[in-house]
Length: 223
Image 1 (spheres, rainbow, N blue to C red):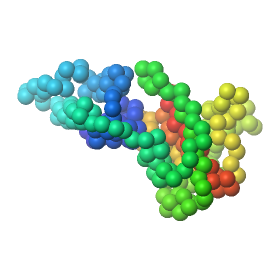
Image 2 (tube, rainbow, N blue to C red):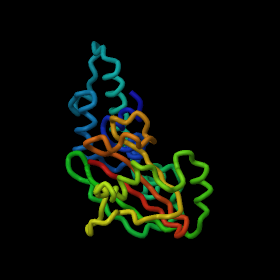
Image 3 (cartoon, rainbow, N blue to C red):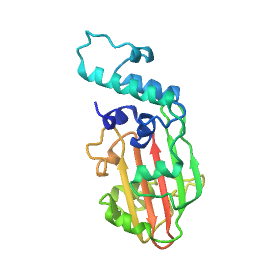
Image 4 (cartoon, rainbow, N blue to C red):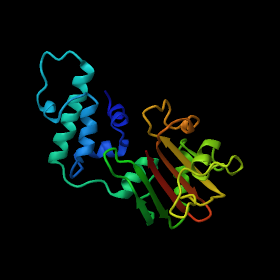
C-alpha cells in the first residue's frame, strides 16, 4: 500500500501524511490514530508485533508503513507551517504571500469541517507558476465547481460553502485561475470534478487566484 493510498483510506491530505512520514509532526490525534488502525483492521499495539505467519501482504505493508510513521512522529520535532501546508495542497509556492484571514471549523472524530484562508500577494509574480501548472485552470469555473462555490441560482440551488451571513465564502472573481482537488476515497481522478455533486459526502481542496487583486482564496472542505 502506497502513502497516497493510505492517506486516501485514512481521510487526510498528502501534505499531512508527509508531515507524519517525515517525522515533522509534534503529535498525532487519537482520532487520526484510530483511522490509521482501521485500514489494516488492527489495534495500536499490533503495530509493534507483526506475526511471522501473517500472509496478507497488503496488511503487512500497511502495518510496516504505520510503524515507520509512528516512530518518526515520536522522534520528530517541529512541523510544517500553515503556508507550507497550503503550498503542498495546491501545488504552488504561497510562502511570499501574507495571510489576511483564516477560519477553520475542522474537528470531531472524523475531523470534518471547512477551512477558508485568504492570502494577499505583493504582486502577480505567482502567475508564472500557476500558468505552468496543468492543474490550475483559467476562469470561468466548470459547472460543478461553480455549483459548489456559488450554487445555481436559476435552479434554486444554494452554494455548498457559505459564511455566517449565508454568502459564498469566496466572493465572485471575474479574472483569474482556480484549482480543484478531490480527496474523496471514491474519486478515480482527483483533479476531475465531474462527479463531485453526486456524492453524499465531500473531501476536496479548492483555491481561486484573483488576478485583479492578487488575492488567493483557499478552501479545504470535509464532511
